[in-house]
Image (cartoon, rainbow, N blue to C red; front, side):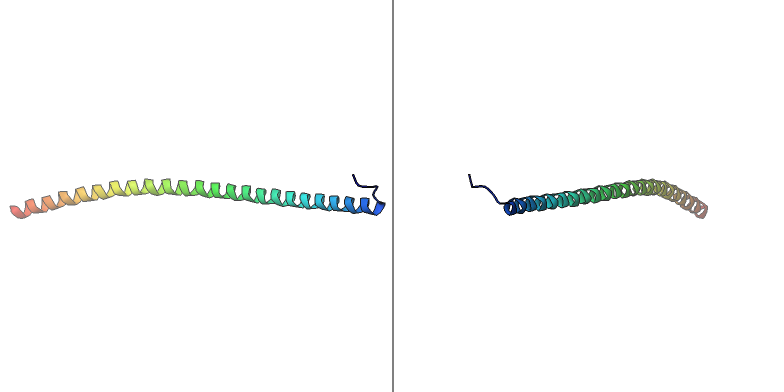
Length: 90
């Protein structure tokens, strides 16, 4: 064990300890701030994902309706062509 410390040495050690504590508090605050920012970004991404999923569902539903309309138009065209052929063959 070392000999008795002077008051100046004790204050130096105390100052170093307080400085280290201050640095640790700053790092902790920075980490919490970064964590909060990451949480906010995650919430924004989840909201965007939800909106995109809804838009995709709407687009798929519309594509399905368009496909049905396309089939109906095709069917009607075939019927019209057959009718025209029948008239021309008379």
